[in-house]
Image (spheres, one colour):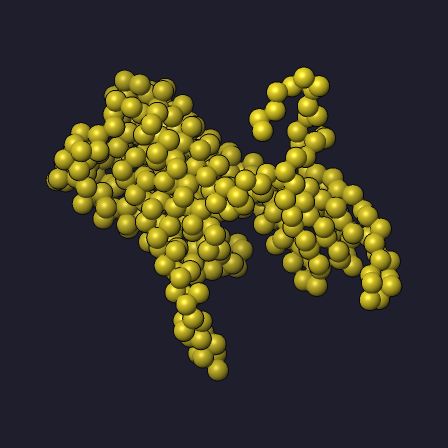
Length: 329
């Protein structure tokens, strides 16, 4: 019976489509790194950003291989700490992406020496050398990587990396999830500045090392915006209505962990005629999944509605516009 339940989804088109999109997204993301990021020494955070940094110190080891070196221990630690809640999709996505990057790197460079140097003038025989326009290169790379990651995340998977670091920091250091990711990516970018920009560990600083750090930050920002757009369209903050019989635990989570406040709204059940408090909460896009998982943990029978909040003004969000202020829209 268990075997039947396990194999039954494989007979549906949705199952095959989901896995196809996961591997497609991983391939698109990997191509973005290999063709537009790695050769130009951009360091856009994450495990592959750290892989680029370490490849400059140990050029015989490919960026994808460093991805394995970070992702596999992080996933093992997360399984021990969180009980393996990441699922098969995330594990396979994290294992497939570095291997694809290594294979593609060997295909687009003519020889092993070129694979070690990652010289863009040798990329596809020089036909894709964008060294003279690094801004355009980082924008293209960011869009391609963002599209790939967005496709993967839409299929309820991730590629591991700093997401796991953020969760570990939240659990053991009491740091918010989004702040943990920012700290992890910030450390990677600063490492790139030290190694590539100032030549620490290599003995040879890049001619425009500090500029590469600025391009890396642009890459991080654009890719995050692309991912957000793929996930949520053009929406901004998220508005949640939460109806639950448990109030104290969600309250402590919202105030202590999210560092936000919320509002109780008196409501009355149409069927039961019972009065209860409904939680009115506005959060950022990154925090929605965290809230959903916590509510499920506290009260699986809770009723939650998530909708878009395109304009949110007040403490913790945007400032009210001035009378004569020019609006973006």
